[in-house]
Length: 129
Image (cartoon, rainbow, N blue to C red; front, side, top):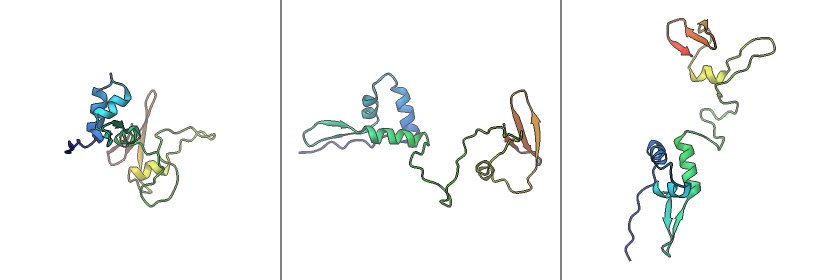
C-alpha cells in the first residue's frame, strides 16, 4: 500500500494569508485546507485544531507560554500603554527603553499634540509617536 505524501502545514505569513482567503469556511475546514490534518490507518481524516491554533498564535507572534527572551529574568512586558501617576507624571518603563536601546543620559524634545505626546531624540531621530 502506497501512501500519498501530504504537504507540510502552512506557517507564518503564508498561514495568515490562507486563513484570510478562507474566511468563509468553518474553522475545521480552514485548518484542513492549511494542512493541519492527518489520515489514520483506517483512512479517516483527523483535523488537528490544537496545532492549527498554535501555528496561528505563533504567526501572529503571540506568546502564551510565558517564555522570556533575553536573560531569563521575569518582569513586565511592554503593553504600549501607560497611565498618569497620582503625582501627574508619566513613567516610560524599562521595557520600552531597553527595546529602543536607550542609555542613561539620552535626551529628548517633547512636543504636545492635541491627543498625543511626541518624543524626539535630540540627535534628530524620531522615537515615539
